[in-house]
Length: 343
Image (tube, rainbow, N blue to C red; front, side):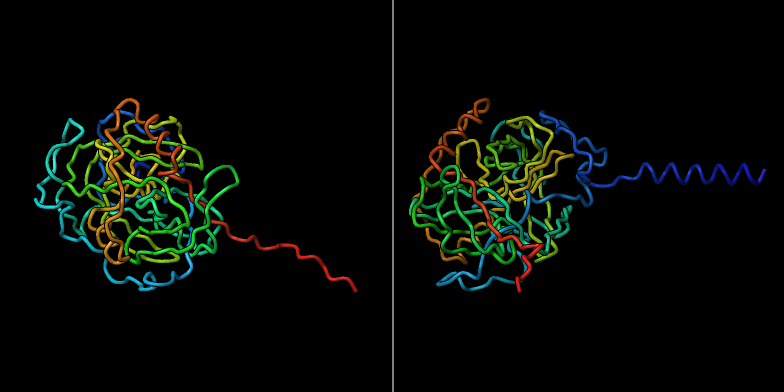
């Protein structure tokens, strides 16, 4: 009898362990739901999740000139709404492109995603977009951090050398300069609203790709490894992806996030394949980065109203004029089998 009771206890323990929620593990990715429905996880987005930075981190020697000043300390934006005026409410669901209730202020207690940055920098690619036609671009920090040489690609095996890099020390934001530029985008600082539509354009897996999403709330992105940061970010759920694949979005990092009117509202910095989530920088982080890099208002223009069903064709036009471009980091390979000297 005692053996039977012991066997039942062991069976119950093993069953409970197998049912444990393991977070946003991407070991077995599946296609995210194209619709605006609820999270596939019954616990929603609460608690900690694992997220993967779109593919590997990249560039920057210590920049020169006015960009030499390092930024440090706590990430900006805690307790501040992503808005120009009103403070935001408790959240809610919105059915239109403009969304519903205002996004509430960021808090260090928001659900977290954790991202590990490899210690070693490798050759990789990401996305950048023009914010001044004279050769000023915005991207994600991990796309250009510690990279010895980076290029904005203008065609197959052709590109513009990145001359200077500014790294925001407490957020996943960076600026780079080149000798030539492309038509630039304007920013929008309107209040973000839960349920509003967003568009993410770039080069996932090194190829053109686009995502239509819906805003769902706040998160905190905690990065550790080669550098450590904790910053407020904005979470979106994928609705439509072009092309529609099971693969991750690695390579779209650094790309612009637009509102329905074609204005930049964030920088795409991370995503989870299994949960169908996309994460962007907050308004407060972008404002702080622009101010600390001493970047004044550029000559950016609104890209124009983005069609809800034809957004991929719209993005193709923006890539064609190089307003959205692929950025690559080139790291010299170490020779594993050096040639033996001759005697």
